[in-house]
Amino acid sequence: MGVVLGNIIAIYRRELQSYFVSPLAYAIAGVFWLLSGLFFVLILMGPEGILQTVAAYDLQEQQFPVPPIDVPYEFLRAFLDRIGWLLLFILPVLSMGLYAEERKRGTLELLATSPLTNWAVAVGKLLGVLTFFTTMIVPILALETVALSASNPPISPAIPLLGHLALILLAAAILSLGMFISSLTDSTILSAFLTFALIILLFFVDFIAKNIGGFVGETLGHFSLLKHYNSLVQGIFDTSSLMLFASYIIFGIFLTAQSIDALRFQRS
Image (tube, rainbow, N blue to C red; front, side, top):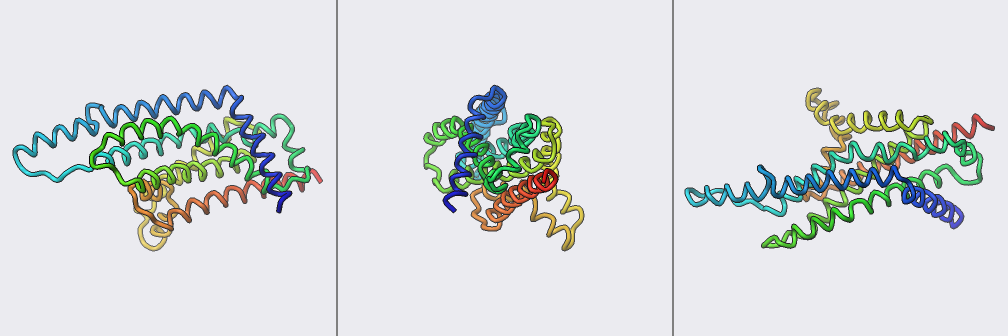
């Protein structure tokens, strides 16, 4: 067990260091911060933003009673919803080189035939890219903290904690599946495109399920990433949502390990 853990840590450090010296990774982070900041400003202070909506409600309240708006909750829900959609475009690019670059450089065969277990390599790579993504959302957390600290009454800490846990779990699920697709090809562009197509399907599977209806539709709807992400972002602690994200993460690691194992079998 100690040897496996040491292998995971070694791969994790190697992968994480590669992101912090990669110009592409910094470009991805820059685009993410730019778009996230734009969403933040528009949701909070845009023409149809939260503050404008509250001001309009205040004017209506002077004429007749209207239901109150939970401003911090609505802001956080809308902001995390936009960030969730942004991941659909950012994460396939971030995960496309996890194994495809190894294939291109010819180092994947070395990994496949090394004493390292395929599971250890896959887990180490996933933890590395997920850690880099987590550092990307730190500035966003700082913006949210400034905005939410001005709310009166203050928002319950459980809601933002659950929302950001959902964000990290969503990212881990997408990155895990993207890692598997990256292990199938030496083309980073093809890997990013196929990951994007798969995540689009998993985002909209709930809409497809509603059109099918019946038991099949209901069963299919449970596989929707967007449905379970929105459930957690809204502050609903649902263990089935947590289990679904965990299942996608483990499934992606499993498929990646099997893919590399098949390569190892071909080289033997």
